[in-house]
Amino acid sequence: MADARYDGFDAIEVLDEVDSTNEELMKRARAGAPEGTALRARVQQSGRGRRSHGWTSPEGGLYLSVLIKPEVPDRVLSGLPVACGIGVANALEQIGCEGVQLKWPNDVVTPKGKLGGILVELGRSSGEKLAVCGLGINYEPIKMEWRDPNALPIAGLVDCMPEGSEAPSLDELAEVIRASILEAVAMWTEGVGKAGSAAAPLTGIKDVYNELLAYAGERVYVSAPDGSVSENGVLRGVDSWGRALVELSDGIVREYDSSRVSLRPVR
Image 1 (cartoon, rainbow, N blue to C red):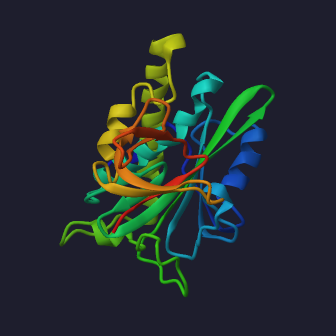
Image 2 (image 1 turned 90 degrees about the vertical axis):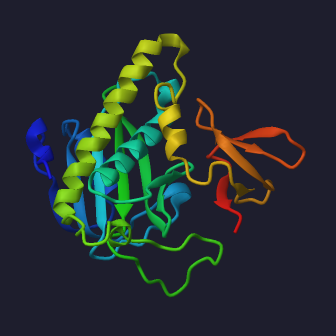
């Protein structure tokens, strides 16, 4: 496996324990840390996912945050988590993980279940845009005392490696993922720049995202936390604004924003 530190970034700092790698890295970003700075924790006490959901972070998993300084218009920043997700998926494929897909909008899944999740948080310092891409990847399946029966099973990296292959160490995995995230973000930034005023959040990456999209062409539930949306239909893909396109029973294709609803497969 190639050493991803060829790019000149400092080695990833490993913390024994922290409340949240995202919070800690954002503090360092506001203090002047350069783009590409990354932190890994052996244990997180207050890991979180979308909508402030807690993320179980026991020792043995990969809990990584990467600093990005986006040079794109504010109107397309919602595409950044997708670019990061593509980078994570590419990295996992690079190490040999099989069947990696992205569950809309930012979960990492395999045929065995949910492998991890991605949370991108934005900030500013002296007018400069800051973004921290945080992710949690299960190295082995986590056993939980209780889990929502409608949730996907929990998968581990060891589950998706080819038979006879060993998963890389957490240090190696973190370096490969950081490099791949930054590469994917650079490609997205270039595509947005070339499109100019016509750019949408997923300009230049929509097709790649749709190729990685889990449950495309399958029936899914669409639901909102407050109960205001409860429907099911066939997932037809994602548009340039990152909205899920779901064909309902009447044949109408509706657009759904990830800030309002979530999807899960009909099983």
